[in-house]
Length: 327
Length: 214
Image (cartoon, rainbow over all chains, first blue to last red; front, side, top):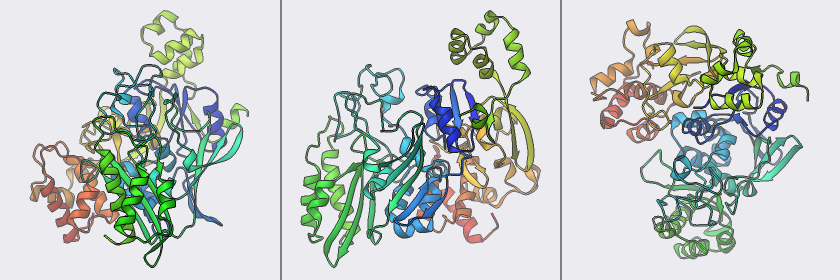
């Protein structure tokens, strides 16, 4: 690991001021991804600003829903009474991610900020446009079993690895950030971005901006939620494909629905077309299959990951069946 | 914003005699032992930056019940601090990337991967390692989980065992050891390449059902 200066701050203003000064300074929260990347030489900040002592770890009711502090630990959120009761999809997604040890360390904000697990991004001896813009993409035409089938570019086919983010995009979350130019709110669906010509940019945060909290609006999906994660082993592995579902049922009719997929794109992939189609339809396997077909429009395999073109729609149907309790 | 506002209640590499020393020493001597960050600093003529890259910061942390007043480089992980500076080699370095769980310790009662924990972030915390698990310390009676691992042959080579035991104790304390399936899920962060998994699950079930205080 490179040597760096260490600074500990106790309030957001100081954190933002410290990181805004130059682009070699980074925030340190749970560290589960950043320290890993620093050990491998993928990241080499000259200064780390430890934000873990800023009191931003509360989970509280608001007038419209729930506000989760950016520094709340993954475990604390997954097991919080209000989350389990009102947003079981978020609990399920969090518990599907990483290991108990990592979930005890990782924060909500950090989870959103984690980088891709693409092996070319991690290996500094190989080309990667995300790590070193202009160096090329090793995954295109290379080992790409874990890679994206939606929203790729000629520069990058990496996926965002988070499970939690799939739940947050499905649950219409909003991200509150504080920066050198003040505070702003970013709809979760617009927080992460597609690679395009600048895959080095994972999200829409401006330099120095700090995630303060995530807002979740109350919804009627708690009774029929499911997070399905398909992976190489039963636990503690990144998703090949994952699906987050929330259904609001009226008898056997789908009143409202939220659908999102993980392991398939550079950002949490919300399935809006399929959602529109499902509204008002009966919860049957036939409608679920049609919805999955709609969701797969525009999907493209890259060789090793062609199996996702079959696995993804099958997973959508399976997750919908489980959420609707028709399985 | 003024600089002193940034430092409100916070910590930053404080000045030290080392800084003074470096300022006086010749640039050549410094260059021979400088890391890239410091070299950049030299190019920019930033003596201050060069100095702080070498500085050791004070850290106060309670480890296995004993308060430790230390001075460490910011990049030292909790795992390296335990093993290399405090000679607590019970905590193992397996992958060093948070993937195997061999370095599992408890920080303020929560199990974490010591390899991905910067030691500085544990300032003011209580750390428990495998050496501090048994009542009466390393010379005392074995912890019930340690006894159970021996009874059920919960290991072969033994390298992952300290991490497995720290995780197993946490697993029961968290209430995640109700049945073998739950144990397997909540022990998934600890890899055993010898494949002693079934015996590890037996050991944890035994302790859980035996009702011993963990």
